[in-house]
Every structure is written in structure tokens, then in C-alpha cells.
Image 1 (spheres, rainbow, N blue to C red):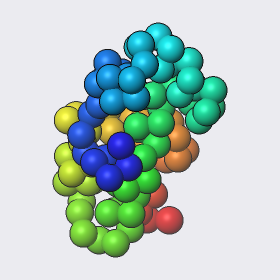
Image 2 (cartoon, rainbow, N blue to C red):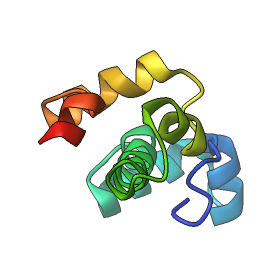
Image 3 (tube, one colour):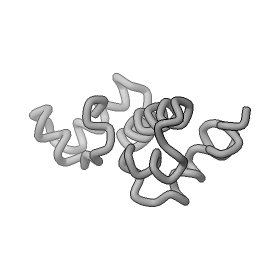
Length: 93
């Protein structure tokens, strides 16, 4: 997931890769990481998006799309929820 951060992996795909049932994979994943699969994926994507924004490589829309967020509004809302400010304000700080 960290190498292919722009790709969304379904729970079923990850479970097959791990050789586990979907329900067992969810339990093991949460136990090991302390996070749900979606929260973990979003954390990776947001980290990369922050790097892209701070480096000046991308604007907010480009960073959202480059990191696999198909919806810029969702990206901005999630960014604000996690970081405490929207991406544009984050860049100004």
C-alpha cells in the first residue's frame, strides 16, 4: 500500500494477498496497526499529499488526484479532519 499509495486496495484483495479470509484479515490488520484498513490507506495518502504540497510539485487538486483521491472535496474534508485545517491553509502556515 505504501508503494502504490494512489491505488485503492479492497479488503478482499488484501485478504487474498495475505491468504486470509476477509473477516480474519480485518481483525489481524486492526490488531497489528491499531487502525482500520481505510484509515491506514488514507493516512498513507495524506502523508504523500502533504509532501507533494510542501514541495510545490502540486496544487491541492493535483495532490488529491495524484494520491488516489478521486474527489477533491473528500480529500479536503479528510485533510481538515486529520490536520485541523484545509490544505490551502496548511500551505500558508
